[in-house]
Amino acid sequence: MGRCVKILFYLPVVTPWWFDNIVEPLIRRLAPEHETHVLAPVPWKGTGIGARELAAATHLPQVHWHIFDGDSHPSMRTATTERAGIVDFARSLAPDYVLCRSADYETVREFPGIVRHLMEGGAAPLPLPQDWVILQEDPFDHGLLPELDDAARAALDRLIAPVWSALKGPATPTRQMCKTFHKWAELPSDRPVLALPLEYEHEENFFPIHRVGAAPNHRLIAELAESIDESFFLAITNHPLNEKHVDNSALEAEIASHGSRMRLLPGVGPDGENTTALLACHADGMLVGDSKVYAMAGFFGTPMLRRTKFKTGEWLHAYSDTQEFLAAVAAGNARRPDEDAARTWFAFHIANNVLDPNDPELTAADILARLDRPVDPARWERSFAHFTSMAARDSQ
Image (cartoon, rainbow, N blue to C red; front, side, top):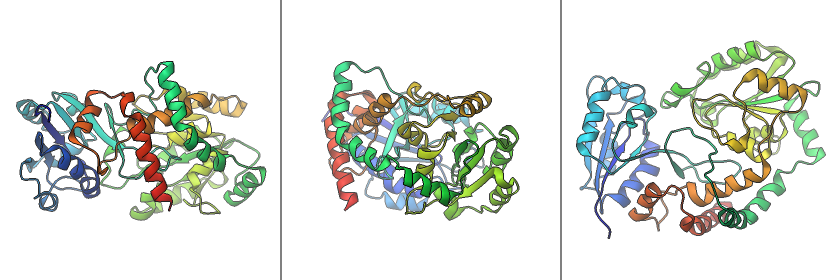
């Protein structure tokens, strides 16, 4: 066993599902070997740490719980009114590492130690389980690739080869498939089609505070309708969790008010496929914010407008200016993601980025190594082997 270090979990917007499936498994591996602290507010709008979570962690008596229950605890989810006090408390703990689930990323920038955000690891069409995560410096830096030498690129190319072949085969549309989808979706053929996948906006999700553009989604539609004229068609898909848990009546009414300019499509396609993936493949362009659907645009080579405060991988060739993007799509010469770099990025994501908190072979040392060495070819072979075994199991 190596030296004992101090770890802080800062969890203002952790949900019960995230705690059970991601946070508790990580704490369970770290706490027996390292001094582990948890700082979080009491429950509010489906987030925080309460009696339920504490009861689920009774097998971890060595964990130090710091539960904030002051009147201002709701503000910890966004721009906390207690920033100075929270930062001072974190500094008094002097953690070596901080793992956070926090929409307010400005506060944690003032924490000591190595700070990483626990974020969703999904990158469709890769079949990644929902509970796999990535450790990020900022919440929505998407598609970033470090400098890689020739040997590293060759290793990634070798590792991804069978996965890429399996993905690209079904993803290559035939003329009949395109015809069937266009007919089912009632997409026009006389103007460019822009895919707009909407983001999750349940009250438990506080990350939309970073959205560039109007919120909630029905106001975003109204805003886009003012900047995108009828020479384009908006093919809209809702987030699956919005379909399950959110009142979508205002969204549906707003879309309907724009007549033939746009349509809200069902989440599942004519043969049971994911409609957003079908649109990413068939659309002339995609409108993206901080959603993980950027990976679909990257995979299918779809021109993309990304409105965000965060970094975007250069290989995606994403536009940031709406009118520049629209003009390029209309002219048929919009920049597309780099195909070779896409293959490298997807390989890098599997090999280096994603972490399975429930991997039975995951150790405390493995977690800390990812924090100490964000890029480490030494873990690539095992990461791919684990991904392959999980994908094979889930396909059965």
